[in-house]
Length: 107
Image (cartoon, rainbow, N blue to C red; front, side, top):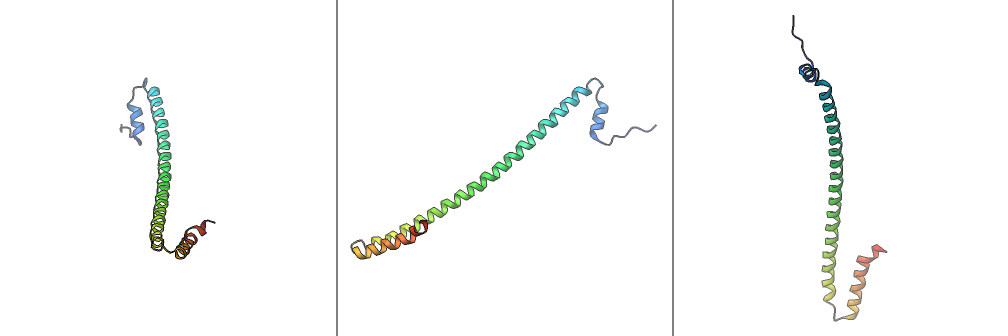
């Protein structure tokens, strides 16, 4: 007589269990699979959340860098205005030019 072959490891596991323990072990295995699938779903949700937060951080960093660049350009332009602080007409023209350069887009 030829020994029985098992196609899956779970078939062999079931065959080796004592008959009185099979229903209890099947219940434990079922609970394990439910818990495992729930955890897989939680992990995938957290990965999606992490990807969204990383994208938001990148957007915030870009906005910060753009703002810092604007402040540097404004500071540089203000040094040109300070050079003519003793000449009221030239000062007025430079301030007007700064206003048009930095504020006209917002209106």
